[in-house]
Image 1 (cartoon, rainbow, N blue to C red):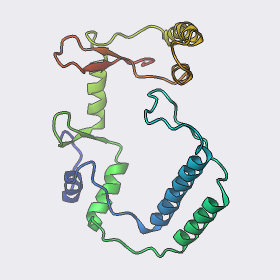
Image 2 (image 1 turned 120 degrees about the horizontal axis):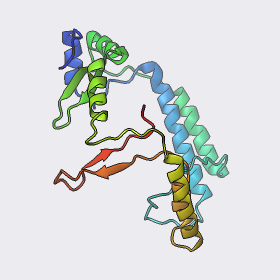
Image 3 (image 1 turned 120 degrees about the vertical axis):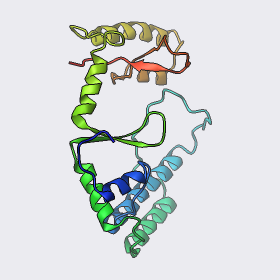
Amino acid sequence: MFTREKLSDSDINILSKGLKFIPSPVLKRAKNDLLCDWENLSRRMRLNYSFRNTENSSEKHPFKRKSEFTPEFANNAIETYLWKTKVELERLPMVNSRNNLTKNEFNSLISLKKNENIIIKKADKCSSIVVLDKHMYIKQTMTQLSSEIHYHKLSETHSQDIYNKIIEIIIPLHNMGHIDKHSLDYLTSGKEFNYCHDDEDSQKPVTARTVILNCD
């Protein structure tokens, strides 16, 4: 731990459970979670019915953007099933599950979550958890960003010029049939991407360093 914050025994106990630990669900939220699952089920069933006559390809396009389309109606049989399922879920009695946290551990979980003075992260090279003072974490980050070996601060951003040049290349490629519509939509969506360059000093083939854009 690299923090001056005083952590109680219950704080350390909850941290020792790991970042993948899942607390027992809160009873008052369980019904809402069930109804959210029902919403997802109804959307999938309606989508399957709406596109039942569409050719289904087992190979997913790597650049296809996720659709948010939700059909309003499938057929009478599916809608009746969904309606009856929702009624049964609303009638379902909620039973308290065994709590896998003590009262002190639960309070520690809430306290750690609200503590804005610390950063809780997984260690880079093992499964341990690291607790850092926030100001120390920011200081280390700014030290890395100020290193002229890996980063260079630009006086102005050229992202829009780069985007315009990319568009000038991509549109003709699509018109000539070299890239399909999904790839075109993905590359021209205007969303920000993570830019990386290879770490030439490393022997690892998949190592990259993030290039920070628009960072003051």
